[in-house]
Length: 162
Image 1 (tube, rainbow, N blue to C red):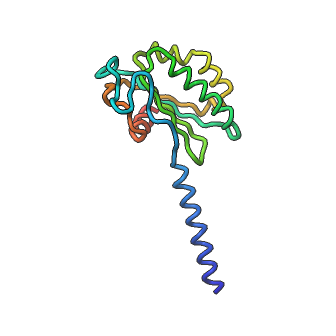
Image 2 (cartoon, rainbow, N blue to C red; image 1 turned 90 degrees about the vertical axis):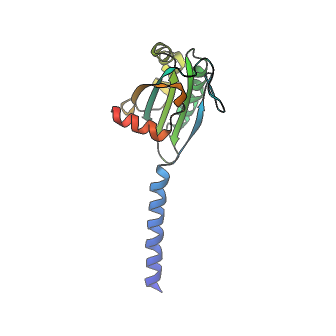
Image 3 (cartoon, one colour; image 1 turned 135 degrees about the vertical axis):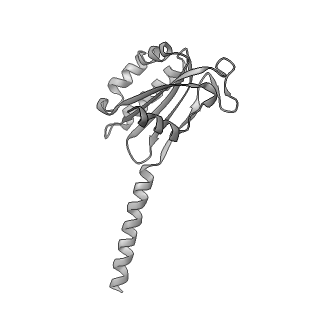
């Protein structure tokens, strides 16, 4: 009987370990949305069939800083939505981990930079709980008809540019 208990115990340990590894790859987030994008129709008339600048970022929220990050994210999403030139955006984070990804599409580099320089974004950079040394970014121009890019595609683009 003891022999079977040890096998069951080792099997359960292996299953828990596998489940943890699988769940680390799980993410939650917001679907792509914004003033220039309709969930059912895609890009709005103003942006249909135009080239847009997609900005991709990845960062790691400092351990114990999920609350400051969440508070900053709310302010940043509001500022982003109100930013002229935004087509749309999406955010996702690891369920069991501290990785955070953003993808945003802009009509111009100037529009993106105006948002990056906004008070809400700057406050999030300082107080948002993301380790500055963990932040990486990638940029590319794509047809708005390709929006939203899949997260798998975003990760491949991101890795290719790093």
